Length: 172
Image 1 (cartoon, rainbow, N blue to C red):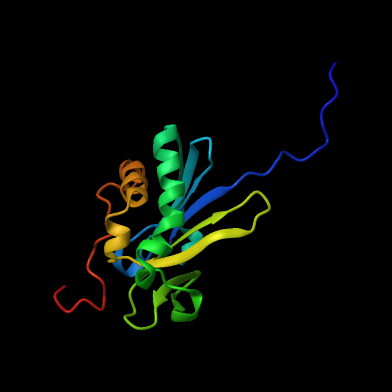
Image 2: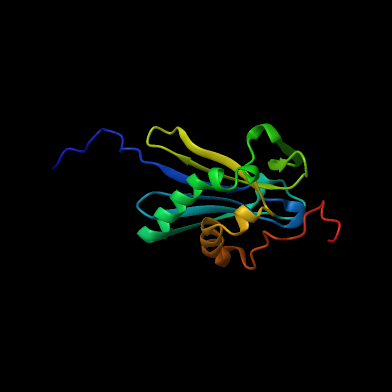
C-alpha cells in the first residue's frame, strides 16, 4: 500500500467575490471563489423573513470555467483599480451596517450604498488585489466577472435581484 503524503497541498492564488446580502430587500448573501484551474464554486445564503442570518438556508454550487474566462477574470480584477480607481473603494470609506442580526452589510459611507468585495490572494494568502465596488458601480455592472458570476448563480437565485431598488433610492 502506498504511503500517504503528510504534506499540505500546495497553495495557489484564488479569486473571491462577496455580496453581503440584505434581507430587507430580499438579497441573498453569497461568496464565490475561483482557482486558476477554472474550478469555482459559491455558497449562497437565502434570507427568511423574521429570522437572523444564522438560521437561513444555504446552497452551494460548483462549476468549472474555461481557461480563457478564468484568465480574463483574474486579469480584470487586477486591472480595475487602474482602469476605474475612483470606483474601487478602500476600507477607510466603508462602514459595516449591523441593522440586520448576524449580518454586517458593507456600505459606502458617502452614499450608504451596498458594496461588493473582490479580492485575489496569492499562494501565500496575501492579497494582491482587494477593493469594494458599489452595487450600482458602472465598473462592476460592465465587468466580465460580474456577468460570469451572476450568470452562474442565476439558476440558484431565481431572478437575480442584485439591481433591486436600494433603500436610499428616491425613485423606488
